[in-house]
Image (cartoon, rainbow, N blue to C red):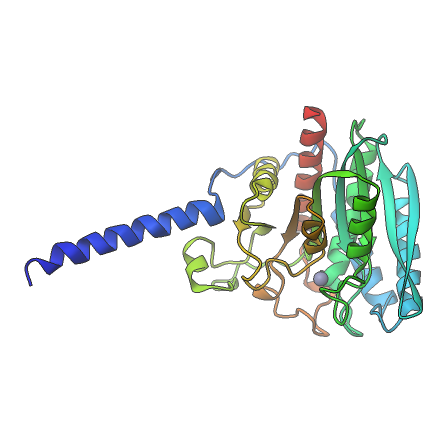
Length: 327
Ligand SMILES: [Zn+2]
């Protein structure tokens, strides 16, 4: 009995070391300090709200069963991006004899290397889809306005895709799959792709944040009041995006590097850029791990926090600016 105790002690010590190593590997806890939010260019939270309100009320349904409404939505996004972009184009493709379009807005000069930021504009079923994903689309439109204010050295492409939701999810017909393939075929070098997948829902309530695995509760907050950046196991992109969000805003950002078999890790358009070998991350409020209105009629515009959304947009803008200046 006496001899076993040190053995148990050793076991616990090794377990603690293993958990700590996992924490460092998965969560990459590099910066704990909260930044100060002093934007040099304002992101207008009222405009974010206006886009989300319009999309989630006037453009319903916008699922694959209503291609005409998806085209109307694409037109809205195109018109909203036109004043800020150098050029806006529609990338047309056909699925089941129906026409669908990606909306592509270009900023900065044509360069070999490019940055891609995108959001899907379709919705699951006939639901309002305010957080999923009018929030990402609104963020994309307001990000365009910030990009117009700075001289860019790198081509930045903002893209809005349809057909992210079932029944096309994970198929080669997703708008983002069509776009990623076209970049590959043109020989483009994507330095980074960022998918804005639900960026509007936050909660300060205790236990408002759930996780796909128990272990993750040790590494991440129990309150859903942060933004998450999701990445592949061996990449360091999420860590960098997270760092910018934490330095330039006071909204806490956390990153996760995990394999795709962890549920949620590849649940959006970034998966299609990974498939083409491009570095890509997803910026998200963690969807159904936090927002109980996910894929229900309760996913409405009045539930979102537009001040926090504005900070997400600004943090991503500052990261684009940083990469661009390093070029
Ligand atoms: Zn979505």
